Image 1: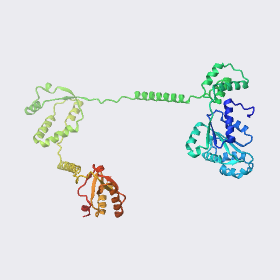
Image 2: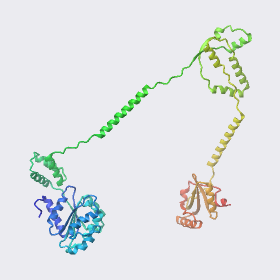
Image 3: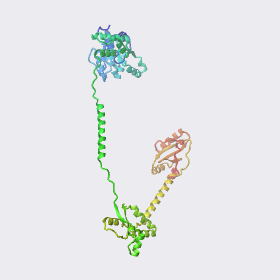
Image 4: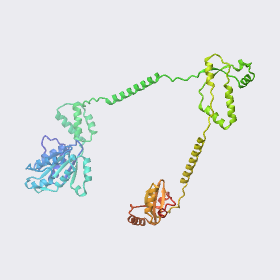
Length: 489
């Protein structure tokens, strides 16, 4: 029976009796399945206490434990002689000591999820051995997820060697009984009503660990939450403040920049006289009667003369000599001195207006260069149009297959390759975009094309040609004047 210090519920006691029966008479590896906190370790400990007539080994597998460490823990509890090699499989080591065994062997492994797969294979092999006329039995506690994965990895013959035993959730009555029993043993009086406790127990999944956590909450209250420094909030706030400061500084710098100064036009005083009055003054050699009216001062804006306004009349004057003479005559008439005032500003304006532009003559070499460049452009356009309108050599077949030997981009490489094929018949050259494609033969079936490709590869020492259907090559352009006979000649 179970020791008095062990506390087991009725469902756990029934399961313990089943495990004890399998350990004594079973011949399979027992997988005790249960969630975290379901009581697997307590059941394995209770099973080790009731199996007094067996040679027992109880091992807990920690995470990241290697196979040699687990073998060493098992063999120290099973073998009378501590001299063994933990690198050898368990079956090889136990076979040497089975003659000295006085009791049947039962191995208990807790948290077997962390055990390497190599040891799982060794444990399955141990179930085929016998000690003192009885089979070696094993009980391993695992999670339901690991047990499902293990069943999927095992072959069909070895699945019969594994017996899964599921640890069922506790009923509501057992949960309440466990809660009250633990509360009584704690000797602490609480003021939690029974209705609230039952309501909390109904929300649980039925593991003893959940009942223990509820009791801990009732006795000690909620644990104090650790104070977490809000560094994320502080970081986001700091970034927002820095961004606002940067925008404000940028706005201040833009507002203090001076505005660009606008250029002001200078106002000058100029006497304008008509050409007719100037001619009359020179002819009669008298002062104009209407001097006050014709030479009335006006305000104008002086702007910098543009090169186009000066050069254009000069170029036009070369085409029309009469117009050039007329322009020069007008320029001379405008440059006739008039009676000026003693103002320095008026004299400066007059000097700025007395600007003569020499006629610009176009050299014949410029015309010849322009005409030659236009001829070159016309020739290039015509050549490009001829290349784009290059006629094809015919229409490709639509039925059957052919062999594609090579695809080249340079015409010089194509010429060298076609010289190599001067003895091969029925060679075509097609063009696809910028690539030259060499095609050989017409075949009715794909098998015929394959056999012809092998013969061609062996005879000419070429790479293996590609099998192409004519239907897939309809967008290729067959080229004229590029057959093997014409190139070889």
